[in-house]
Each structure stands twice: as structure tokens, then as C-alpha cells.
Image (tube, rainbow, N blue to C red; front, top):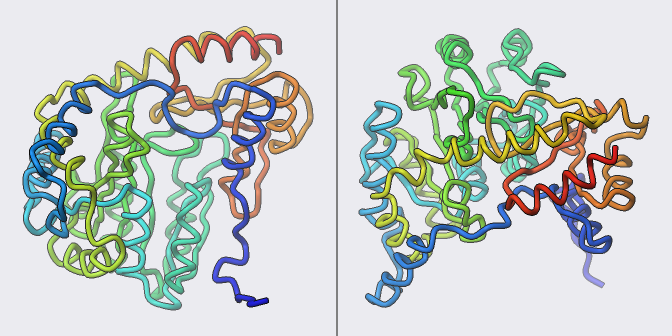
Length: 381
């Protein structure tokens, strides 16, 4: 038998796989993994089909088809008042996860430190380790999940190469304020630290708040890779298409890795997305679309023993379970799936040391019928 020395000794089967499998086994409503159970706009499908029928089926340019990069640059300029060059500063990627890995491989050298704010998306730390970097975990403030700038500042050393910031934040649903972004700007100003700004939920911000993109802040945009996702925005997570916007010098290094990582991304989908982006309402109306789902879900849990945490953005709702029983988060999710028939994700899965706060995460990016069925079951509690 051939044996391998693993590069990721701490990585096993993810909690998302475990909970989705259990949900299927128990025929439970799966509010665990974060993907919609409804279809995208048929006009988007038509645009991709038309591109295929027009013969746009061969390799596109390595950074992405120009018309899509131009549409992305125009959107960013309109929303965040920063003009990226479509030719040299916007790259189309095979989803946001590939984008983040490629950024880290491009900028992190063995021994470099990268700050991650926990709880965090589960790809960040393995990406850093694959690049030979050292993840430095800094907790967001428990309960509120706001950034603790004193702790962040204390971890910055001459070895710090980058910091990953995610707003709107998965899993907590917290949205960074303009004041917090300015604090980050001031903190990083005297350093050479790269900012990796994960903004895949940029169009899911509620109650009249505005998404504060790194592209809006002069001291951040010059050092930032801004990452977003067409899959999240247009309800097509399975297409795995995203983009990275960054200054030309950063993009130059990013594309060196990108061309040997995936080289390029599905051609007809790129053309279809470019055509569909002309309909700005599709993303401008997204906050209202998802806020209705959030409000429905929160209202349905008001009479239960779940304590609702704030949900300012994303399509995730976190709840405190301490009034229901004293189970740890992972055990609670197993029990909830098996006995109540609804799957959730423990927040401890987003911490390296498994910090347990008796908080679990539900995804409300579901059909109204799906949410109502889940609420009917959860209201028994």
C-alpha cells in the first residue's frame, strides 16, 4: 500500500457533509448547508443557453471574457465609487473559494502569518497551511461577533502577510460598519499587510444598512483583494463563478497563480452572466428579497425557546439554544436533525478549537414552503 504524508492533518469530513448526510437519512428539512432550494431567474438560463448556441464554447481569455470583466468593473464603480480597470484589475474565477486559495498561494510564503477572524469560513485556514503560511486566529467578540481591534493589533508582527475579513459575515450574519472599516484602514496604514476582503454576501444587507466594501476606502483598496460570488448573488451556487478585483500589481501576481490553477472559467456562463448583469435590479433588489425570508423565519421562531441573535446580512440566522437543553452545539444539531427533523450547523465548527457557545446556524435561503415546514417543526420547541 502506498502511504502519503498528509498536507492537512487536521482536516477530515466537514460538518456540512455530516449534517447533510444525516438530514437525508432522517428526511429532515436541511437548513444547514448554505445554498438556495429555489431556481434562478429563467432569463439567466436563457442568456447562457443563447451563448452556447452562438458558439461561445471554447477557451475564453485567462482572466475572463472582457465583457464580463467590464460589467463587474462598472458595477463596483456604481456601488462603491472606485474604478477598477477591467483589463488589468478584474479576474473571473471558478467561485470565491478558488479565488481565496489563489490569492493566498500568490501572496503567502512559507512562514508568513495570516490573521483570520473566528468564527470563519472553513477554507481559510487550510488554504493558508497549503501555502506554508501560519494561521493566526483572532476571535470576534463572542455574542456580538464584532471585530476586536485591540486583539487584532496585538497579533500584527513583522511576519504578518495578510488578514482575511468577511463582511457580511458567515456564519454570524454581522455586517461591518463604515466606522469599523475605517478602524481597520487606520490599523493597517503603517504596515504592508495585504487585505483579503471576502464580500460574497455583499448584496444581502438588511434594515437599510449599506455594505461597506473595501473598495470604498482609499487606504484599504490599495492593499485589498476584493472577492465576490455570482453564485451567491444569482442563486446559482453550483455554477461556481466569482471574481477578484485588486490593484494591478496585486492582480499581476494573482493571475500568475490563477493561470496554473484553473486557467480560466466556463465560457458560455461568463457570457450569460455578462448579458444578465445589464439587469441591475437583479442584485439591487436582493436585500429586500432575502429580508422577507429573514423576517418570516425570525417571526416564526419568536414563540420558541430559541434566542435569536441579530442578523444584519447574509442568509444565515444564528440562535442561542441554551433555553432548550444543555447539549453542546454539535450534539444539539444531531439531536435536532434526528428528533425534530431540521438540520442546522454548530457554530463551533467555524472555530479552530471548537469554541462552544450553544449557538447554531440556520440557512433561510429556502422556498417559503420549506421555511414554513421547518418552522412548524421548530415551533414544537
